[in-house]
Image: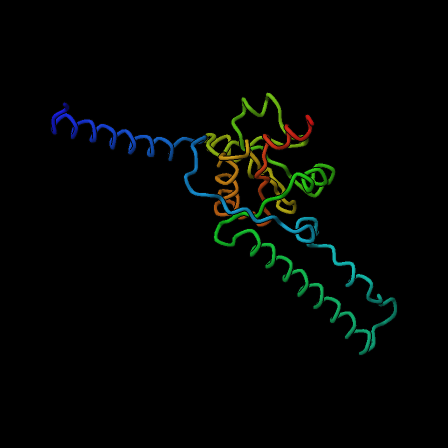
Length: 208
């Protein structure tokens, strides 16, 4: 029989081991998240919208003569509509990206369209060694735990007028979430979405 003192020592060792494991996991870039992720798919209308392009406004008549009172009203109304519509789209984008920090995610089908478009920047948030082995076409590598001297110039080189898609391994990988939070909270990017299927889904579906 194991006496009470030995049982207590075993219990203390087990508890300490669990605590140390949780601490290690929290600071490990590839650690496992214990909280379930909330997945919300971004709509095509938001994902593939271009903020500066407002076709319905551009169809308003242009003024080629010396403007009279009526013509001036048309021009002012057109400018006002452009400003209001653009601001509404920007506000919608910020709201879509920041609700409770539950980043919206794109699907595999949307990713196939994204890699064919010049309006997107695809970022692989995995470690450089994994990126070098294989990655989604046209993606660049930014590891969120790189030295600041390496990370900051990479982020500053990103165009602010593009939509950013961030991915990592998929599944329990949180690297894409960490990088997306940095891009929004520390660097002021607005259009940031995740591809939660990540490299695991992409590589599997392209093999089938």
